[in-house]
Length: 389
Image (cartoon, rainbow, N blue to C red):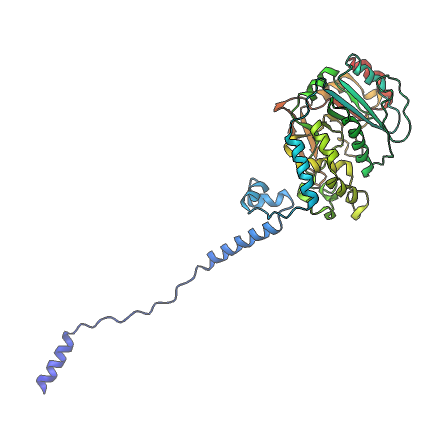
């Protein structure tokens, strides 16, 4: 018994005791990584659904602003176009894609939008003299029949209608002038001028500047403030989105192809006629400041210069630009205006922003302005002496 017991003890002593399976605690999940990924996803979804409305918000996430965020986000889903939009785009595309009709005698159409008589008709007579056959004149007088002192303006009045500042009637008058000027197939460039506009250079300089330009000079910029995008109405949807809404001075100079598509447009024009007017939606939308800039920004943004060749001084920051009296008109004033080669726009935000761009003519930096406004009638004799075309 003792031997057997000893054997068992010995045998057990010789046996190797294998270690049992260890108890592993549950893996700790990387909670902070999951939270970070969730926040990023939430940010992307929110940015996609509610894109930043101001540039300041964009710079929180990128030093390069909104553009880098826009490129990062997935493209917005394209909506189905209406029959009107499809028809409009087809017409506009065909006009822009076809080469313009070549004229053996290309002319500039000078289109005057005035209440009645033109106070600077003597100055324009001096400007036009000796260049017959290179220009056409059209006068839209909205209040009274003009009395002309230059034979270049005789029988050049078109059928006119009432024009009210800030309303679509201003755009109607512009289109009425274009319609008459387009009837002459030799007219290749179309300049809109007011009764207070004067030329800053001689005829040959202006003719060559416009005729050899590869773009139209339509003023256009983005103003996020109350007097820019603050005037936008969602009633313009879906054809006109807020992101495409632009502002600019009405005094354009455009090529024949662009004049044709302005006349062909009824769809986008109707949105501004119905929903961009003083007092609508509690806003003060000015149709002539928004229709053409928005229209060209949507259909041919690369075909316009985004600045006007007509100078106006808004430095006083009032509802109307600075006007020049006789004592203001000096050689220095004219030299200063004709030497400007930067286009400057100021936004209407509380903390306004200056938007500066060089005036590029066919890719070359050149002086911006061919015409200027607003001059009082009393300045005519002094201007004729100083300009001396």
